[in-house]
Each structure stands twice: as C-alpha cells, then as structure tokens.
Length: 257
Image (cartoon, rainbow, N blue to C red; front, side, top):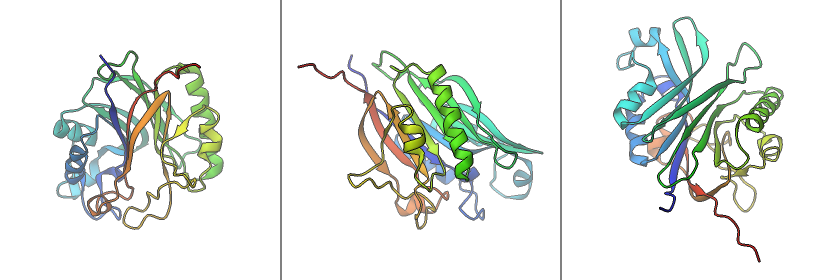
C-alpha cells in the first residue's frame, strides 16, 4: 500500500475568542476547521479552563476547548498545559482522526511572564511504515527568549527524534524578525514549507490585516505536496492569527545515477 498524503493545519486559536476578546468564536472555529478536512490539527492558545469567562460570558464553554473541538470533529486529542493561572490555563493541543501517541510536553519557558511549551505527539497515517512526528510549538515574543527556546527544541529533537523519522514542527513562533530558519531550521536540517521563490514568508498576523509573519511550518523527511494560507474573510473574522496547512507524504528516496 502506498503511503497516503496527510494534511496538517497549524492554528493559533486565541483561546476561542475573537481578536479583541469581544466574541466567543469556538463554535465558528470548529466549523471552519472541519471544512478544511485536515487530518491533523496543531493548535496553540487552546483554553483548557477559564472559570471567570465560563461564568461571565454567554456561550463560553466550561469544557476544555480541545474536548469541544474533538467532539465536534470526531477527533482524538492531546493537550499540553503550558500557561497556568488561578482558575484558568491554556496550552497547545494536537487533534487527529488517527489515534495519537502522546510522547511529551516540553516546557520551554524562560521567564514567568510567558509560559510556553512544545507538545510532541505521533500519528501513524495509512500506508506509512513509521509514525509522523508532530511538534506543536508556541514561542516567546522577545528574540533573546526565542534563541534559548530554539536551542531547547533543537536539543530535544536531537535526543528524542530519529534523524530518519518524518517530522513536522509547526506553530506560533512569534518570529516577526524571521530568524527561526537560521536558528532552528539549519540546526536541525529542516525544510521551511512557506517560503516563496523570493524568500518571502506569508503574513499571518493580525488576521484582519496581516503585516507580520509569525507562524511557521518546518518539515524533515517529508515532501510537501500542497501548502495554503487560509486568508479568506471567514478566517479573518475568527482568531487574531491565520492558519497554515500543508499536505505531506514521506519523502521518496532519491534514485542514484
């Protein structure tokens, strides 16, 4: 059986709220994500609990948002709790119609103000000989902090991910200075999915009028068959970030001679 192509979408959900926190958007986000027909979702800023909003705002669910999405999409889910406060917490989540093997939630926090993590999960698509390694990441706002986080991610991958494994690292890198390719991509021999012939990356933030390229998708041992920035008006009215999707399959061995 030839390996099936798999579509992976990365999306910062802004805790299920609109860009200015004026409207609960979780149900609309679930519908929009369902219409993408993705196989794997790598989500950032997923609300696990927010007691105050649940009690105060109509339509804000008391259930963890990854469970709400999982039920609506009939997806398996895994949650990595990163930012923890009294009566609320949020983090990264991986959802998939394939069973998920959760390996680790890597803490890459470098200060008390920004609690960040990388959620390591693996899925086995149809026809694949080995699992697809998925790392869902959310990095800091400051470049000096991100440099430390790139190093932490690099060390983790070198220790825990086989160099032959199909790997995707995606998420909100907050990489407005566009340094991640040099600090992480080259270190791990990664391919960056969203760079055009002129070396430009897509603008993903703020969603309504994108001016910054904050989100990244990196791959290794994968062929990227399709890539898409979801920038329609529908997506502009949901979170403060635009989602990125890639369709991938295992990289075919190069013929010699």
